[in-house]
Amino acid sequence: MDLARLTVDLAALRANYRTLAAITPGAGAVVKADGYGLGARRVAEALRREGCADFFVATVAEGLDLAGRLGEARIYVFSGPMDADDAARMAANGLTPVLNDSPQVARWRRHRHLPAAVHVDTGMHRLGFDFRSFDPAPFDGLLVSLVLSHLANADRRGDPLSDRQAARFSAFTRLFPDARTSFGNSAGALSGIGGDVARPGIALYGGNPFATGRSPMRPVATLEARVVGLRTVGAGEPVGYGGTFQTTRESRIAVLGVGYADGVPRAVSNRGAVACRGQRLPVIGRISMDLMHVDVTAARSPVAVGDWLEVFGHTVRVDDVAAAAGTIPYEVLTGIGSRVVRDYTDG
Image (cartoon, rainbow, N blue to C red):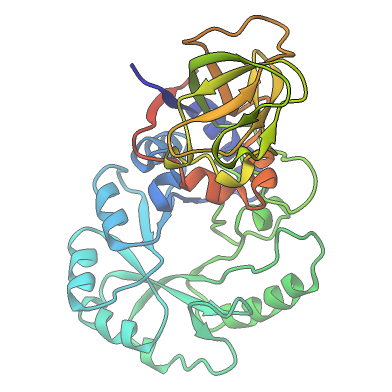
């Protein structure tokens, strides 16, 4: 019997894509990290049916997992070719490398008849060519089909760095007038600065791409856990490892079959909430590897062993869990463990 399940609403995923594509026509999709933990194959296939034609992954292995599954769609590999074998595998399987530095350009030269993307660093200071010292000469003879950069602070509306990056990127793109442009992540796309091919990620999966305010996207993932135990505990009793929670009244406590090994952040101990039939109930005690405690004393309807409670979804949003844990929804979604069963709905 499964103790934890993740339900992925592909209809909501596709609706989120339509919302983004209405603002930045031609929007692509970032499906790295196994589709942000939701299953890259199922996610990408659903988005392809919605009209998405540009997909972005982090590694060659992620690209190979999708190669041949998405028809004529383009699959870009952010890491670029780390060695000659990487370049050969990408070329043989129709993957498009994102070239981040001069050695990668050299590795791709023997495959120069195939398209490549160029990454310019306009202020993130991570990967990509420095916009201040870029030399276009090594790209002579290469088929550059896409030029991209990455926004550092797009989650903060009106941040001045985004404007500076946009100006730098605009100047850089003039060096490759025949290439399409890709600039905006989720927050950038929703702010109308995506380029020809926006690269939304977290917004597709229902997380809030902005640092403040409610998410404008539909929830896509629902993590639920089964009640595996119920007990009544008297007042003044410690609960869980370390006794970090003490009851102040006689309490009815449900034990859920999910823990930090399944991706529930330990940092939500004594801080978070789960939901039972639309009612939020407090997480008490420390999250353990396989189990967690919930105070169901005030539940409006009886809770029984075998019931499913929502860890996050429509009532407790993934952003709520992230806030309680002091992290971001990206980390919560990508941290969902492999033993959590994935179910998919599309309607």
